Length: 251
Image (tube, rainbow, N blue to C red; front, side, top):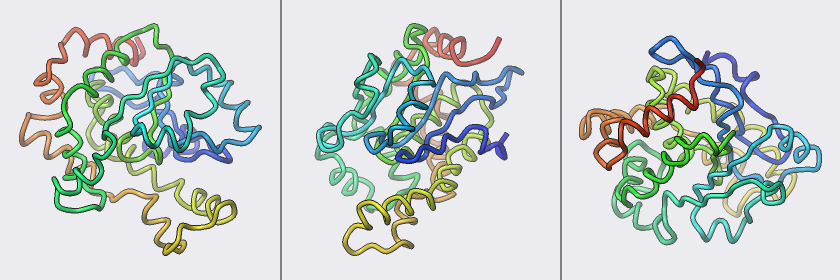
């Protein structure tokens, strides 16, 4: 299942890292449903052909993990005009990026930095799983700006609850790197690279380190016994977890 990138990836012209997590096997012999959970980066740069293809996916709920200032700068994106239910659940609050860097002692992407997301409190994760458990939320698009860090951690929590093997969770995270060259091409030909960046540094910034998700999962295991242990520790009940499995796993 880790070699089916072309099947799960949607190569939109103006949106990157957009893919379906369907098809992954769960521990009880079932598989994750296709077409129910899409993970992505920002959508505000989509082209007209992109918009039609996006509409065809039948998404009914948008979960936006960006900070409020990112939403103000980039806009909500095209789903705003399609009657889609919208939830802004900021994993990192406004002003939180600097706080996070002080907390973990670095600014680079790492499992330690991902663990730092949890220090902003449990409310975001509780709300996220309430939406996941709600059958009326329908097909979900969950995203941040790049669709790799906050989106990657949230997706790892979901796949863990669905009892997908850890190796597949880490492999799904690393699939982000497949779309980095396209994203670099797009930025170079539209806005140009940010000041002080060339193609190599842009690709590094847009990608993910191969060990970051593993380090994050190790940290959860050491402190809480794993992702599900953390979720239970913040008050997410087994009935919520069971409802999430019922919604996202095939019968």
